[in-house]
Structure formats: C-alpha cells, structure tokens
Length: 149
Image 1 (cartoon, helix red, strand yellow):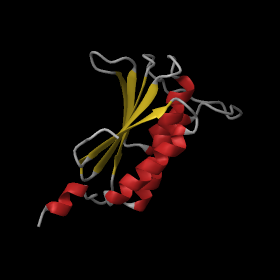
Image 2 (tube, helix red, strand yellow):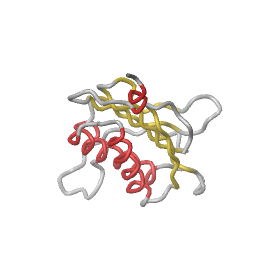
Image 3 (cartoon, helix red, strand yellow):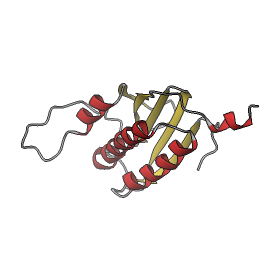
C-alpha cells in the first residue's frame, strides 16, 4: 500500500478478474475504519466493483500493467473512488439492450453515484482514471479524527 493521508488510500491490483473482489475487501475494511454508513458502503462496493471490472475487461495495454485504486474521503459527506488503468480510451456510457448479457456497468455507476467521469492521467503517466463520487447521508469520520480531543 502507498502511504497516503488518513483520508485517502491507494492500492494496486493485477489486471485480472479476481482483482474486483480483492478491491472490495480492502474498501470494506477502509469504510469500516472511516465509519462510512453501511448503506453507503454497500453502494460504494458495487461502484468499485464495476469500475475495476471495466478496467480489467476493457483496458488495452501490456498484460503486466497494474490497475490503481484510490479511495478518498475529501469531505466527511463525500466518498470518491478512482480507478486508473493503462488504456487511454475514455469510457462511454452506452445503453444495453434488454437481451444483452453485459454492457450495463457504467449505467449502474451513473444510476448509483452522485457523479462520475473519466480523464486522461497526468503528465508522465499512461492511461486514464475513471472516478465516481457518492454523497454520504451522514458524515463519515476519517481515522485522523481519533487524535482530536
């Protein structure tokens, strides 16, 4: 794990289907540590799973590239999830037909998240970052608040 402020964590995963489950486990632990409400945590787990699955399924790049996951609590009332991969192709929302067996991931993200988007990664990096934000119904408590009397 990369060292981050108390209100942000970052993990790297291989570009493999099992990475979505591993990312969910880490997010679940972090959400508990931050006191994120249970209902919001459940929604965040779905959002994270969709973004990681899309990165694994659609990222075009060398197989040894890793997927970066960053989860932030920029304010006590917003949880932000970012997933970075080696593909420079930005995702596009599409509407799956009723008999399609896949293609609903971003529709689900758009329906559940407060906001979402994607952008090329910064200078010196390859690929893109797809992100979403989730408004929290009650304020979460970053771990750093434990130190405040």
